Image 1 (tube, rainbow, N blue to C red):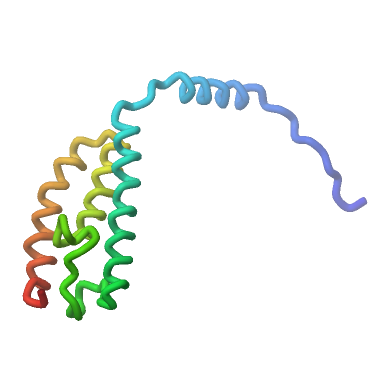
Image 2: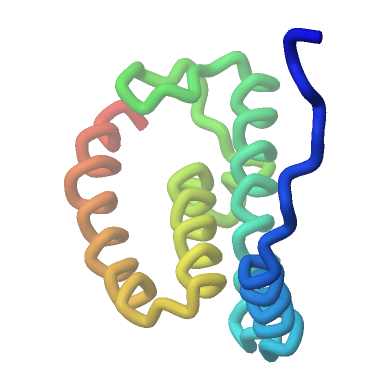
Length: 127
């Protein structure tokens, strides 16, 4: 036989470390921001997919670099002019909540400002 099939010897120290890690993970309390973060993160794709379906129903482009062929005023566009950017911001906020990152949440404010002044301002003349 060319190859021998066998079982590697069990390293008991490695097993103890793995047990300790599993015990630490299992006994850790659920982060208070994890559940709201997951729901917030999942809400973003719902908004985005609704906006994309509405754009397709109106036969207009979803690309912000191309002019729109129709002014969409139904679906999520009844509530916000930029639901796809809202969806991205919602996903960002959800991830920040899940990671329990205060800095990430605080940086969302300048991020929204940059998107507002440098991205959406460029395409407003097409509306």
